[in-house]
Length: 190
Image 1: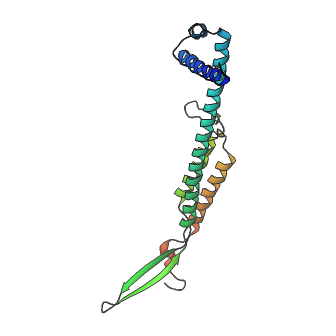
Image 2 (image 1 turned 90 degrees about the horizontal axis):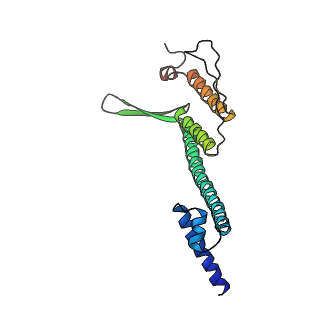
Image 3 (image 1 turned 30 degrees about the vertical axis):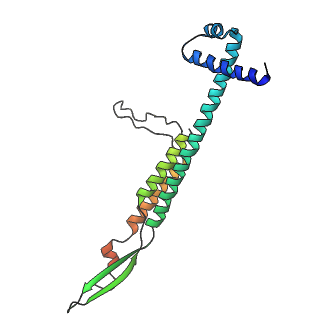
C-alpha cells in the first residue's frame, strides 16, 4: 500500500469516525466498527474538536470583521449627514408685485444640525462595542431609601459621555440661536 493510499484510508476512517460520533456512538463502539483501538478514536476526535473550534473561531472572527465594516460605513454616513445638516440652508422667497411681476430673493440661514444623525452614530459606536465585547457591564446602585423607587446609577463609557456632551452642546447652541422671526427682524425696525 502506498503512502497516498494510507493517507486516503486515514482520512476516510476519520470521516467515518466523526459520522459515527455525531450519530451518537461512543468511542468503544466506533473503535469496534472501524477495527482500531479506542485510543486512536480518542485522538481522532480530539483532533476533530480542535479543527472544529479553529473553524468556528475563524468564522466568528470573519463575521465580526464584516459586521464591523458595516457599522463603520453606517457611522461614517451618519457623521457625514450630521456635517451636511450643519451647513447653511438657502431660502428662496418670491413676492408678487402689482402687475404679476415677481421678485425673488435668496438668503442663507445657519443650521445647527440634526441630532438624529449623531444618535445614529452613537448607536453604531454602542453596537461596535457589543460586537467586540467591550461594552462595560452596568451595575445598578441603590441610592434612595425607597425600595419601590430606587435611584439607579450606571457606569458608562467615556465615548458615551463624549457623545452625550456633544448632544448637550448642540441643544444649547440651538437654544441660543434666534427664532426665524427674530432673524428676519433687523435692528432699528419696529
